[in-house]
Length: 219
Image 1: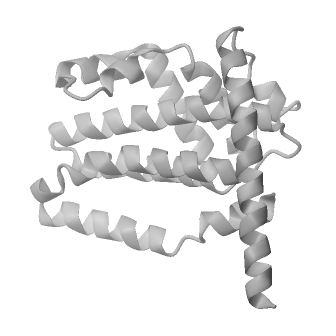
Image 2 (image 1 turned 135 degrees about the vertical axis):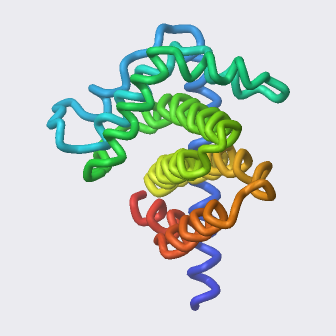
């Protein structure tokens, strides 16, 4: 009986993923043909100012037209290009809004359409790339504590995406890889305090509930 339930669960999961893939194939080409519609009112028709998730979605809206994170995160991009991207006032405001949101209680939106979630994933990935760029620059400057903070914020954002929807799990994993890959390239250069900070972060995330389970429960 347990095996049968497990088989049915896997079948239901695959059917759901197929359905979302079909939706993505339909929605994404249509998005490219029309101006981007603001995400915030579609996620939060009434903004309270007390829910950090509101500011994170607002940051997604703000980062969409900014091209610098895409160019600065490409392989082989010079450190000067990355620094220039972070000096952009729009980028500074986006990162500030993101961090203000992460510092508040995070209450997930309800009743959001699959199409709105689909449109949200691209700017979420762009936010992760920005945090990866920031982490790279901080490591280059010897600011290991700041770089670990960038990594922590990136992982928190990725976790937020992973636990809300099944498809979001795949997006969240990709976001985690973006921010983790930066640190992994430099881990051998870390001092003992830097290593201790990284170990503390790893311990913190080991104790975090599995986002896949939370995503399934939210469906």
